[in-house]
Amino acid sequence: MAPPFPLERFGRMSENRPTTDELRALIVEILQGATDDDRWDRLVGPVLLVPIWLHIKSNWDIDLFGETADRRAMVKAVEIVRGLYPHARP
Image (tube, rainbow, N blue to C red; front, side, top):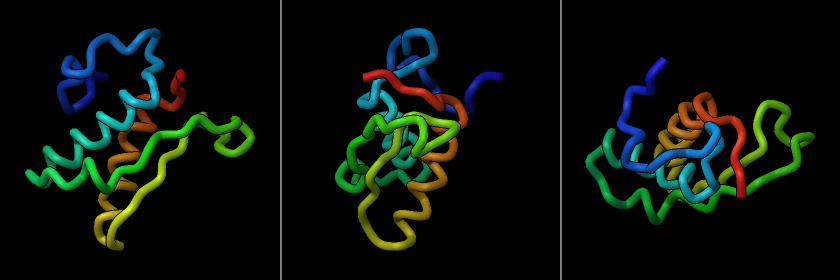
């Protein structure tokens, strides 16, 4: 199943395990494309690798900043990206 947005912009994500920086860039790209707003780069925090016991289905988490509506939008983008790439590499 091909993702609904162009991943070519992020280069070849080796072995389907993108880096934490690639994941963050993809989340920002989704949000900017959906809203035509460039403030997302300030609101989306770093993607952090976490032990698998914290997230059974994923090894990364992210800090989200902003108003409640902004965080809701970010959570939806994170869910999309986590569905495509549950495991990241450093």
